[in-house]
Image 1 (cartoon, rainbow, N blue to C red):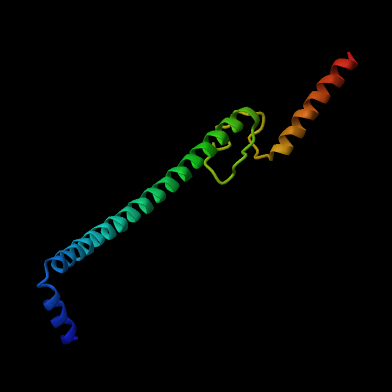
Image 2 (cartoon, helix red, strand yellow):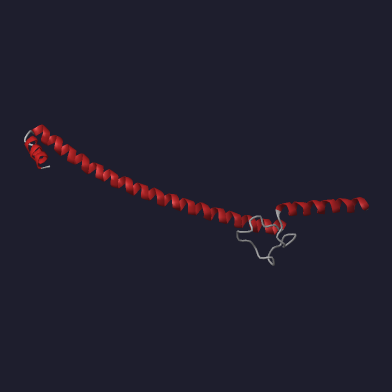
Length: 122
């Protein structure tokens, strides 16, 4: 190890080797700086990615809530039971009972059929 240092000191006496050693030191400093920037950029990217996922989840929850309330007012159906919806007392749809979409369609078909039968009976 001591022999390598002595050789480097001897070579440093030559101007071209001294410039080369200075360039190597400068490049090492730049490499460390770029590595720090890369680490910081990766941390920023991860933070932005997490924020984007949180915003997406919040938007999805708001959409489900809006759809629940609108469908509950119009049809008495709650398409997303895990999301916020109106209490049964405030629901103004045909039925305050929670129904699946297929049950709501079946109820609408039955209503239309009964209306047609009633008109034909007259």
